[in-house]
Length: 408
Ligand SMILES: Cc1cc2nc3c(=O)[nH]c(=O)nc-3n(C[C@H](O)[C@H](O)[C@H](O)COP(=O)(O)OP(=O)(O)OC[C@H]3O[C@@H](n4cnc5c(N)ncnc54)[C@H](O)[C@@H]3O)c2cc1C
Image 1 (cartoon, rainbow, N blue to C red):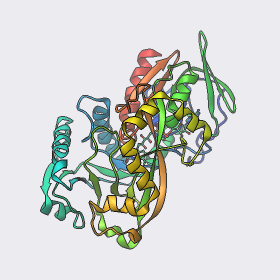
Image 2: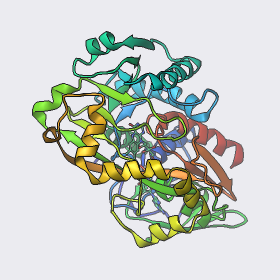
Image 3: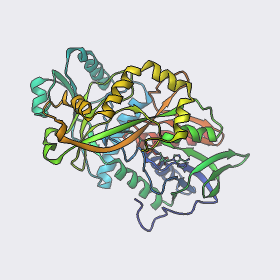
Image 4: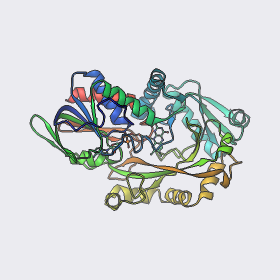
């Protein structure tokens, strides 16, 4: 991903002022923001994979969320609305392909109408403009192959390739003098009186401070720096199907269900991507690995050893069974999506990629809904940055940089 001639792929520095751990979209946005504020500081990014943004940042729906879903007053609501606005401006400035294609949230039965009302209320309270309620005919005008009894249309929702956005952040950071080291897994952060010793697979870096943006490994990094293990990251695998090219016309932009308000996931949706593909998904299945692998015994052990994970099983076992059915049976998966696009048939889809959501779960079994940050001696930690953190990345970065200026 890196551009030639820039300081990406560099050796890890022996010393620096600030080290950012994690080269996903959040870490790179934070790195870019910090170097913009402190151009003379020595700042490095340490990323464990050989490429940047190999995890959630690349394996997602690619939707620029407008901010409809999130509880008014929450960090998600505030940072998503700001972040989406800033991201559109950034994409314009950097000529990153994107489209404000709009989205329909569709109710297919009367029982879902209160949920649609609540989304409209939240969207308006979060300051969104242009939200419109549609009836069945209105749905057909925007999405001729979709069906439902009512919908909420959000014209501000859009699409982008978040990997391309992250690449642009990395380029901004590197051309401002930052260094990025890939293939460098941080194992421990040891605070001393004047510096923080960061031990990694390429040796050690003495940093003034660190900011950890480790996505699915955020809890391990925080614990390695001396933080409380609560909350723990519990991985949820999201697998997608994609429409075969000759059936892509079934979906013009984005068609979403009315989500279960007790869960932080949005349900199986149909998403046109910026490259023209149409995705169907994702599932939301408790996973046995924190990356795209199916099983990593250490990750599974971590999940099973966490009391909060058992409380999640206990509370959502019915939802879990439905998700297992979607993951195991393509017919069930397609029929979940065909509620919204009835012409959709099993032969119209082929398997696509899977991503793993890094979802923080508290010891008492709460799926932490909001973004969460914490601090240890000489380090800040992004502890929960699930969707819409990619949309919100520029606003999250500003928030983290302000906190760093206050604490460091
Ligand atoms: C299926 C799915 C669909 C989604 N859809 C959307 C969407 O449409 N819109 C949206 O806004 N958001 C969406 N999201 C959420 C979004 O992708 C994430 O919120 C965002 O990418 C988080 O970025 P990140 O940088 O925190 O995490 P990541 O991209 O996962 O990056 C974390 C990085 O930290 C590195 N790292 C971890 N531990 C270490 C260590 N010890 N040493 C060095 N490096 C380390 C990892 O290798 C990784 O590169 C979706 C997520 C998923 C999984």
